[in-house]
Image (cartoon, rainbow, N blue to C red; front, side, top):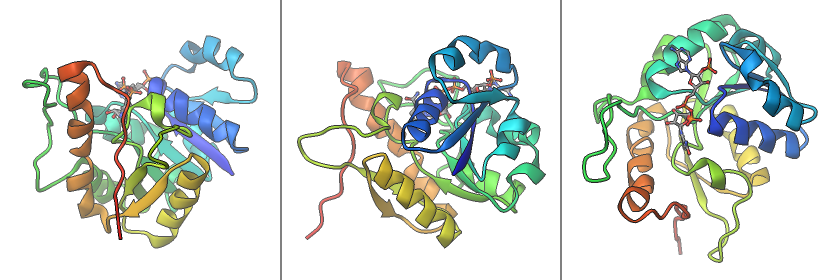
Length: 213
Ligand SMILES: NC(=O)c1ccc[n+]([C@@H]2O[C@H](COP(=O)([O-])OP(=O)(O)OC[C@H]3O[C@@H](n4cnc5c(N)ncnc54)[C@H](OP(=O)(O)O)[C@@H]3O)[C@@H](O)[C@H]2O)c1
């Protein structure tokens, strides 16, 4: 599959390399693609471009930009370039204010998530929340003694979620589908929980797993 990754930070780079590792064709996008030059040189086979070029290239689009500017980044990507496509949304609505005793602050309200705003504005795209509640270093094929961790996902489009489930399997995750886009109100704050041991005890090596009978 052709994957357009929007973002130039750690998450975008890790996921772009992960897609490439699993046989996908990848273009990574930034407002300033030139800044990815060194990274592209070390990651043979991945190309770079603007947000619009990466979005247009992708049959599937991975959104991994600062949450506060996710809407602007998608404007630059172009609504037409993401229409009808699965958009995996790893963004968290983290505020610029520092954490409060290790608890991240959000700029969203508990009754309306970032992904709902994005889905409403870019109504022809098929958003699926995923990869927002684990650190970038553990996103691709993490190894835990307790087995495969759980990736919580949600979104309105069943076919898009099936696609993400298949990617999760490649990336070493089991999937827990939490329903429609509104469930992002619960999934986005999982990043607060995930980060707490990090801020409190410098422990960043963990992932969530759901136990079922
Ligand atoms: N860090 C983690 O381990 C982790 C884990 C899970 C989820 N997340 C979430 O994943 C997302 C990416 O995190 P990150 O740490 O890799 O990167 P980040 O520093 O949060 O975001 C960097 C990206 O944001 C874009 N950006 C910044 N200002 C912009 C603007 N005004 N307009 C358009 N784009 C703008 C940058 O674009 P340019 O390339 O053009 O500069 C860059 O691609 C965030 O939403 C974060 O909450 C992070």
